[in-house]
Length: 356
Image 1 (cartoon, rainbow, N blue to C red):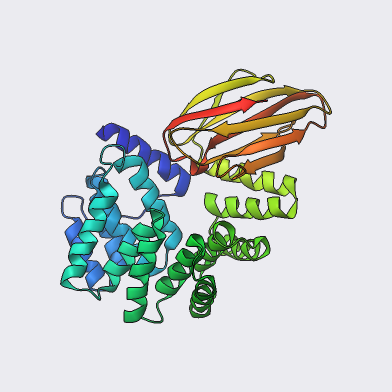
Image 2: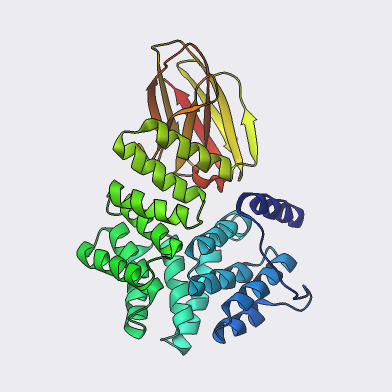
């Protein structure tokens, strides 16, 4: 199991970059020390400490939990989400109650100090990541009472309201307040774009903020997925396909090619983190290539279709609920390539692909 963890950590280093441990020695660093650094407001040093603790014990959730908290307090929301991805890949398969354990820890801290900004931030973020927006809203409201001008609090309260579809006017006001407080933070723009893609759909607004996030340095899979969604709404299939291809390339460490898929066939594919399937799809000019995807293990798929020259020509994401589907008329005769995986390629399970 430990070797598997180191292997997956290596995969995610390739996907998302490495972390700096600093000069802390592995046998001296602990999550408890990291928490003390957070309490002292030394967030960057805390990240180094938690990173060192993770390197020493990659199967312990507390290191990831603490590093997420420190990154939130620094305003690095995309990086914090990346760390939750590592929890999903490394910890949850062996400890499915890890999120509940983290939340219980936050509840214990808040029972002692109800106004603890770090604990309120960490707890609300865990609820937000777990799609429990009512609980996130409740915790964020408490945070805003303690710190009315919190960038994080306003941003994620607005996001949670829009994603849940409640108090939308207040949610928009929260988001605008966060932008006013940190207009040049690409992480803020990323969360805004996410809210206007998956909460209160506004493709133009989502596109503008996602572009600002990308130009600000967040060249991440989710930012490209948001841009693809905007282009799909604009009817620009080629641009959408290019961003979906980039999303898939960023999350893939292993492309597995299957046998060609003819019409009226179905393939059941075994996915693990980092794996994308490349499916040859023979077609003649004028033929409609119809693809559907489904899974009983995970609810979010993404795909791109490459023409016989390898150019992205069509893509799909969130077409039927969160499953990708595609109907595209072949412009030339030849073998197209369908690349398909789970969104962000962090989940394990069966993916069912059907060509009608």
